[in-house]
Length: 447
Image 1: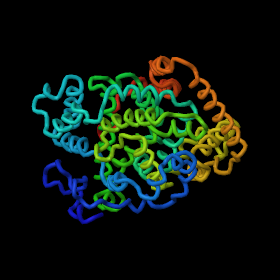
Image 2: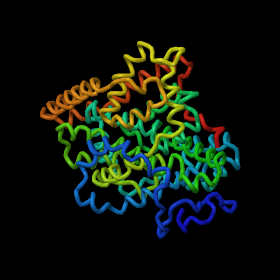
Image 3: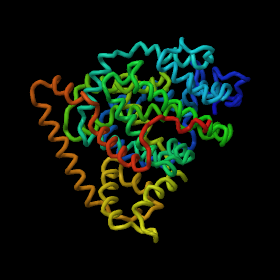
Image 4: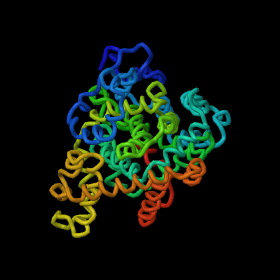
């Protein structure tokens, strides 16, 4: 790490504010962690196919100032919420959660003896950044929802690959073992959150979806705190921070931009104003989610540049990739470890869809230790490509119809249909396991 972080990242001097491992203006920028600099080719297909063509040539040769700060933030998490988790260690997690939930419902001013760390968190939550415009946020929500189903599928594929293969997320997710031990709850919670943030007024301060976003944010900080204790400071100083600020930011950018980039790559036009509004929509979600404001892009050009620059640093696969992929494939395999008939029928099209958007190298890395490692997918990839083209073409035809504003409002009235479909399927699977709600409290004993 740079000289600016020479003091131990865990030495807080008895106080949790102003951790040394958080960026301060004037600090020397830290480089990418070594773990993020390998296997760059795994992510070339998605980057070259959908992202790089939309980057201005000048930005390709001379990246903008955000790029260096985003690299730096691989070394840190969510300062405000990480401080809150340390405060909750002092007062007890049950009491801390009670205070947090009361403040979310009734305001921080109604919480007697609230710790200073919680007060600082709510000063941020109660005061959106100057660039946040509720009207632009709503328009961005509508135009984002208007992206094609194929575009949303491409977005979901890249999220899945980053989660299972990418170095940052797979390492942390593998350590928690939630995908292995609590898969149905994990998916039900995730899909429910993704659908809810596409709902009208989802990021209004007193929306229940805003509240859920803060609870998910708390879970991430609980995991970081737990891993810091388990792995030790040397691991953080050598490898960077799991579920880093950068990883959370790039998740928001990829969700915000990729669906429309997939559309653009297949001939569907999106106005620059639409792209910018979609970025503003996800920028505010990122802010509430705990991404440091200094790295959040508020224009599509900045977001696309960051995505193009960051993708090669996604890294992976990791040891956790094998464990999670093998657990996911277990239900599709027989006692001898071979794919069942149903397994082969499901796996071929699924891997082909992932390969179409994310590239076959990343997919082969995903399934390298599973019975699906040698399954042929070339024919399926061609079929998926035809379906994607057809879906985008249908959306292009609808774009030519009159009354676009009314259609956007109507389509967005109940949130995004893609995520709503995922919620319906995951809810049914979770219900069979006795899981009926999404309290987002799984890691209260982790930190």
